[in-house]
Structure formats: C-alpha cells, structure tokens
Length: 106
Length: 123
Image 1: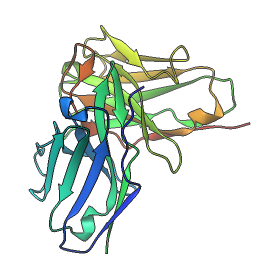
Image 2 (image 1 turned 120 degrees about the vertical axis):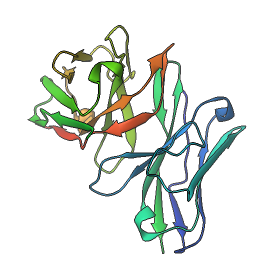
Image 3 (image 1 turned 120 degrees about the horizontal axis):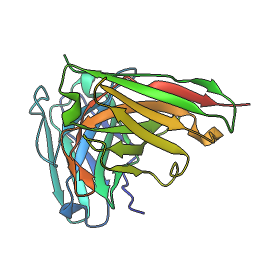
C-alpha cells in the first residue's frame, strides 16, 4: 500500500520560515493536499493540488511537489500556525494521509 | 454557513455495532462526495470510506472492509457509517468530510470537515 512520510516535528522561530516535507513514491505525479489541525478545532484545508490556497488561507502558505517529495512552506510563521499538518493523496481508490507533522512556533 | 456535524459516537463493547451519522447544511449536499476519516487518540488521520455524490460508488480502507458500510440519504442531507464487529483499534474520533469532485476512483481535496464524534470500543 502507498505510504506518505512526514517529519514528526518541525520547530520554527516566530517570523521565520518552516518547511514540511511529505515523501512518497513518485508523489510528484499525484495531487497533494495539506490540512491543518489546531488543538480542539476542526481540520482545515490549507493547500490543494500542491500549490493552491483556499479562500481565507494566508499567502504565507505555499507548496511544491516534485519527484518523491512534496513540501509545504509557511513563511513568516505566526503563533497561530502552531498545529499538526497532514499531507494527503489518492492511490488505488484510497485516500492516504501522511504521518503528520507537529509545527512548533518558538 | 457550511456545516457538517457528526453524531452517534459512544462507548461500546468489542464485537458490537454502532451507527454514526453526519448532518450536512449550508451547501448542496447531493453535489459532494462524502468521506469518513478517523483519528485514534494521539495518532494521525486514517481515511475510512467514501461515497460518491449520488451513492453510485463506495470505497473502503482495508482495515474496515467487510465490517463498515457507508451510505447516504440525499433527501435528508445525511451521511451514515454502519460499523459492525467493532474492535479496540476502531477507537477513534470519526470525522465526516466532503469533496467537491469524486470520479474515476479518486476525489478532490477534503474542503470541509466536521468536528468529529468519539467512538470508544472497550470491555
């Protein structure tokens, strides 16, 4: 079965840039979506098809996808960006989520 | 505004059954594919099942295939998950989520999620 791997945690200083990777076999050929999960809040879509931001998501969130790695970048990190982040793709009629990354803003 | 609200969770014994519901509002329910996604305590997200907008197609995770059944009633804007043969590793918060497009064995992103309902399987 298809697997997506993410770093367990990423720390970023306030105002700096955080990068979260999502590794999977030839993931560059797939549409990757990213979700944010803040404690006690509903999950939120932050990027779809790798690079597109839904309405209301700040421009600070951006993404790329090539080869075996997709990456979401949070620029000028703010305290409110502290959350768990998950990547997701479809493979063989199954939705697959990454292992999740906890982002801590210092 | 768009809402997805799950209900039906609770504490059940292993081997028993439970039916979850998800009520949708604020959008054209029958236009969207709908999913169940779960999250065990302290763990990551696990996709469970999807049903196409018109109910014509359904797909399941291997971990629940044969035990769980997804269904919907577009006349009532309701999504369901019938769970049978429950096991301890089914303990999780269960979320419903929607996709604008499903077809050809894939769906678009999950653009809206409910707050979840907790299912605890324990003797």
